[in-house]
Image 1: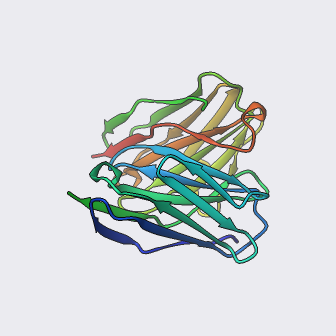
Image 2: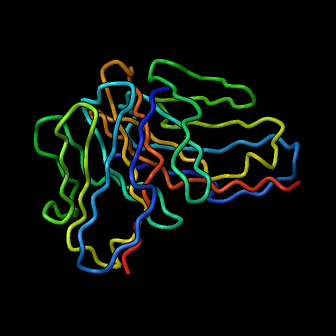
Image 3: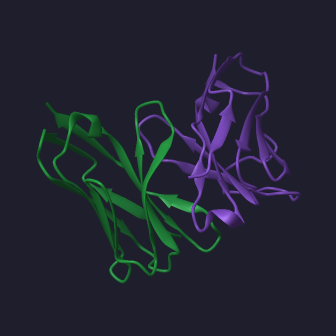
Length: 111
Length: 116
């Protein structure tokens, strides 16, 4: 069964700093990988979707990479802002169309 | 992206009662809907997968008689928590997948269930 792990579990950075969140998965046979943001008590906001054939996707200050063969993805956030504070989840899509979620990284950006 | 709604956004009920949560895809036809549960400070755990017009497929450890799922149309799925207990208190999130949405699932805003 697919297992998705995110490191670190929590991260605090000063405003303006660039940061990297890591996601690893055990089964490289995936259709896509998605990064989400979740604010406390709220649902999921999709940030970036990387198809299995792609290496990276960018949206504004966010850049996500995918190395399917090694089972890794990173989410790079440039020039972090206090509004970026949230929990970031990565999820990989398997053959049955269901998503396997990682454990999440709680990010705090300190003003 | 496509929009998925959930209703209610939060509900408080007494132990032993049943609660129904609705999940709707507003601007696309969802051939498959997924129900997830999230406990505080934990990640999402898939409970069941439902395809329109057929019985839901439940994940191991999820009681199908307790969590009744109906996917009667291409835009609506319901999750009914029967005889709710305090340990059922959780955040329930649905997502929808449709052929027109590429390979992406679209998530609802979630329903906070509190069982007293």
